[in-house]
Image 1 (cartoon, helix red, strand yellow):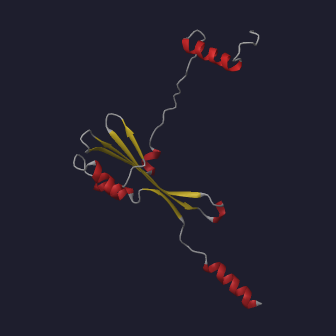
Image 2: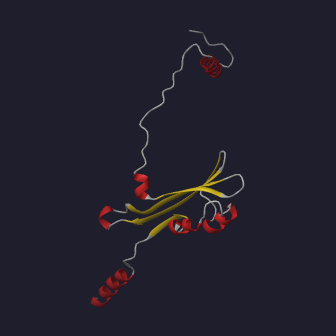
Image 3: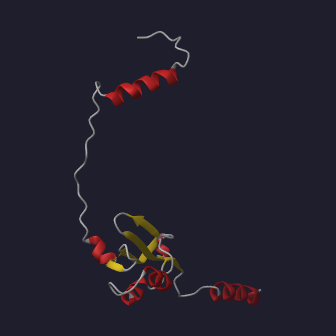
Amino acid sequence: MKILLLLTVFILFANCTNKLAIDHHGVNKLSVKQNKLILNETNKNDIIKILGPPSTTSFFDNEILFFIERKEAAGSILKLGDKKIITNDVLIIEINKYGLLEKKTFYNMTKMKKIKISKNKTEVNYQKDTFIYDFLSSMRQKINDPLGKRKKK
């Protein structure tokens, strides 16, 4: 009986490990790889070869590529599965119309904490005498009473 109990305890502890289980998302070692990119020399094909496909692409005057790296590890047992962020890096690359790297901006967790977000809010004023208000209210009326048989108030 003692041997069975000892074997069970041994198997349970043999499966435990001190290594953290890390969830990784995005480009691995982004902070190191971004140093290989040289302004006005590296082209779009080289960027994709070094970093892989971008997480997001945006097209304005120039093409903007976003690369993300995020690593999370399970927290302590006392926090019941809450994850701790180890790495949270973002690289924003701007490519000019010739396909060359024009600008790169690297953000890590300390830089992201320094970004100030505006507290101002935009207010929208809808007036009853505008064309949009009239159009939307007529559409609402047609949806609510498609045959026009309801009494008007």
